[in-house]
Image (cartoon, rainbow, N blue to C red; front, side, top):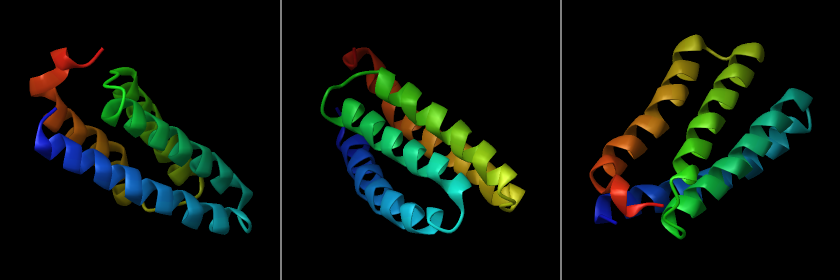
Length: 106
């Protein structure tokens, strides 16, 4: 696994754990956000599968969580531009860093 991918996955791991706690706090006031909390937890699991297990399924979990978060953001009235950025940015960067070593993953 290349260093850039490792750094990116560690970054995602830390940021999404923090984000899960922040969204969980907000979900106390907006119950729909619990779906985002679950998506954040699944995203962390996906990152762990990529980072520690070298499993391709981790990338697919990340993509699924991006779609789920996009739908929840649209339903909850988030700006559509920021919802689209969230949908595209994380999976795209991960894919670009992952594509050269894709065969290395199971």
